[in-house]
Image (cartoon, rainbow, N blue to C red):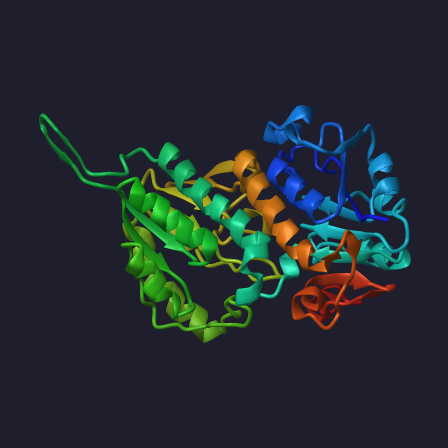
Length: 374
């Protein structure tokens, strides 16, 4: 019997993305899978029932979960929904693996095989499956647009009848996928851009986009493409050099994150106090505590001379393209597991094993285990 991929509505009523799009439906059908979708699950991404193609529509989340062998989600389902999953069901998507020990235990108790795409190994073979990168690119793009819309200055140089307006100076902290997209977008808008990251290998990437690398003399490359936490002396050296760049910018965009931990506080209260009057700060790490002192998740606040924005769920603001990217990432992850319409999990595959949150009644990911105290 062919594997059934189920798409329920998001547990978050504010979520507009969907993990299924017409092109991916075609690919799933060609691979021998069937697709069941809850009515309303694609409305936020402007996909009506007629646009998806050969899928079965049902009226409730329970109907999806009862029919599905594999469930695709944008965010973690509610505990009530998880409790109705059949043992052996495979759950895939953005599952916030570090957020809840109780949810991890529930997955184990229900004998659910859960793949949290946030845990995907950062290796070349998995790039086409990398949800964090695809959604991060959208978030970085949004950060630059939000900053430009709130800045009291033009981003580009502007010549007019009475003279010339100087371009804005933008500083981007963190040069992962989101940071690089913020740099590229700010450059396209005409700003003078500087950027900083504690990983020295990002310098070439930053400069390739036409930005200037801010060198603080601190190097902290970690594993999996992320930075490690800084020591106290490193933090002091970073603050001294970085403070000058922060004071000189008109716009500050921060994107630094450490998986499974609170976002590192990089921009101190004193640094914010030293910013130009009217400066704009967009803190992309607001949801996990923020990189900037004074950031409030989901709000825009005044901190000293600066207007500080703490956006949440940025990819959901552009659901058409982020849904397309997310759905393709999920299909690329699932496709190697499909054999003539049947699901076969290869636990010797480092991508499969490395992305597994739970399987056979236990939490499989060692870092998640450690963070959640399991």
